[in-house]
Image 1: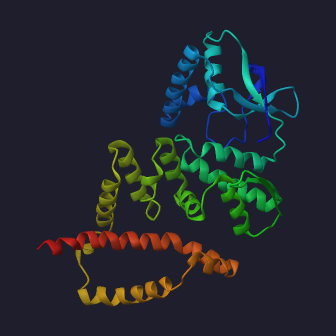
Image 2: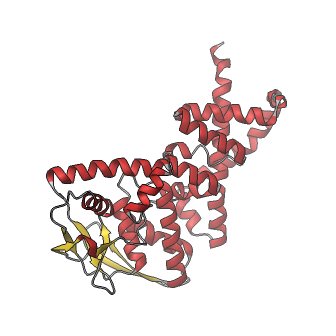
Image 3: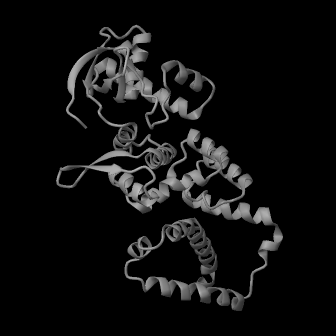
Length: 334
């Protein structure tokens, strides 16, 4: 980020950034309205906001808001500090803010919208309240924009040097992802994990995000295709606060209920063994490749995409086999 200077700016001259990656309310009125309507996430945000406002009232604003000049009207747009701005707005509304001049770091903001979004992701990704849905949607948004329009992305290397990468419009998808991943400091496998939550049906995404279900629990839901099971699971996770172990157990129970008693008929050992043989043969063949990522990256882009599409299917298969193994281990105790 470019060097910024400290100024005191009137509270009513500061406006939220409509492109900020966090799903935060654009105003105090919107937050109050959502909390009163029973939105669980808005209620959590409201409680945290009250605590922050109390802290500011007691000890003052410890960290200035970072802003940049708007293109017109002499106003400033928030770059970092949206919740602090909301808390100050609340204190002002309650008549508890004596000085309406807010300490702000003012930066020139030469970044493009994509660069700015990536920088904000870099800041927010470490925050506990920045949920995986916000992150996944923001990654998808910035990738689509760079692929359609191109743009410059500045990367800070390990030695502290700054390199500007020019992304051409229409560049290969993987090349753009390489830049995005490097910018926000995550690897490809971690990015796949993050984006996997967008495979959930939109209704399930909305419920899970509002309820604040953590990513560690969402991973068990992603392979499930039946939306009825998903809805019931999400409801039970929220109401009963199921642990990861309890979620796995409940998934098996719901699947059995769905398919009926016929699911109790076990295939014979010889049938299982004949099905395992090709899996073992394939596993041996793949593990002979010394560097799988390098071998895949050297392939045609369509082939690489095919490998990518295999990941959820492989993960589901492994989870199913592990569940079967867990059930079969009772035989070892006899």
